[in-house]
Length: 100
Image (cartoon, rainbow, N blue to C red; front, side):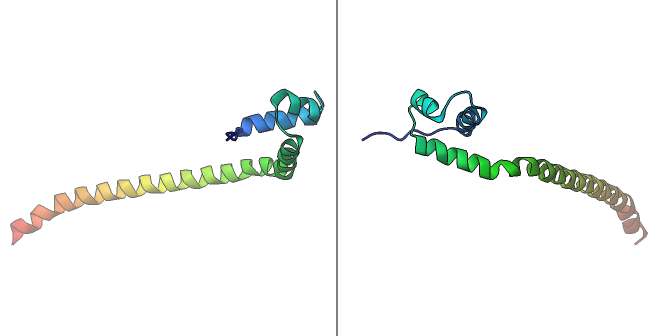
């Protein structure tokens, strides 16, 4: 039985970009890496279909970072409030017991 080769995303991108740039023909690249042209054409199709999403990820990432920062500020503020309430409870708690 032959073992299937797996290719990294970086390798696939490198192959597709080499074809799109015109450095070599698809046939030359396929022979060089011993891969079938149908596989490379599938990679190229996927690459071109998803190319527009590359630029959209920057916006999503920045929105995610903003949301994370907002949540971290909220956690910090709530932590400070809890600490203040604990100190106030500690200071006020024993004095009430003494008056009883």
